[in-house]
Image (cartoon, rainbow, N blue to C red):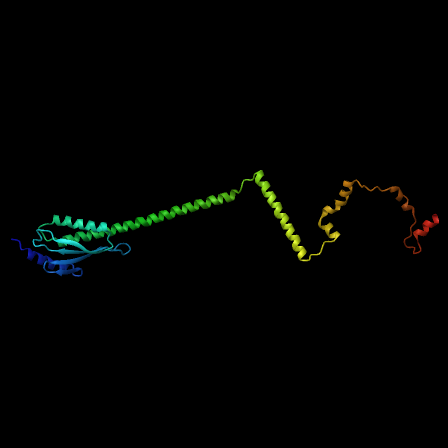
Length: 251
């Protein structure tokens, strides 16, 4: 006849020696205790943890013990369900032998797998962000290149838009001249003399001739009046020389 109480006491002593820092007895009748299981640390030090509560039934180990997840850290609901399913499977496979160490070891391995999954998820998320950043950079590069291409090509000139530009340009130049003239007047800038105007604008040297030609007022000169001027004996050094008296003698 199996002595269930003896087997349970022996296993309890072994479990306490194997897990001295994580084993805690909750009660003696029925025998109930907890074992805290922690995964190995992940790449960035992340861990998952589960505190398992076991309770011996009268005919344990021929009947499976009772179990539950007393507390947990960083486990998702789906992970908790997977652990409970794993405990059920391992208990059914090990009926007839003390199984607490087997159950705890199975949960330990499961927690390590969960950390590996977390690590893979983090790596996939990192790669996804990197791909998104690369795609965003490519889109930005294409946008900049398209803008630069449009800026380099400029606007195609047509008769219509050239006339619009020309009219706008002439208005701007007229406004600019008006402002300059106003500024000069306000600054008291002196008006230019005729000579200065002539030197500044060479169009003035033909303006009078053009005016005469346009009006038909041509001036004719009688050259015969000046044919004998060289025969005159004009002594400009004689202070008594008077052209008026000379004319009166001839009369």
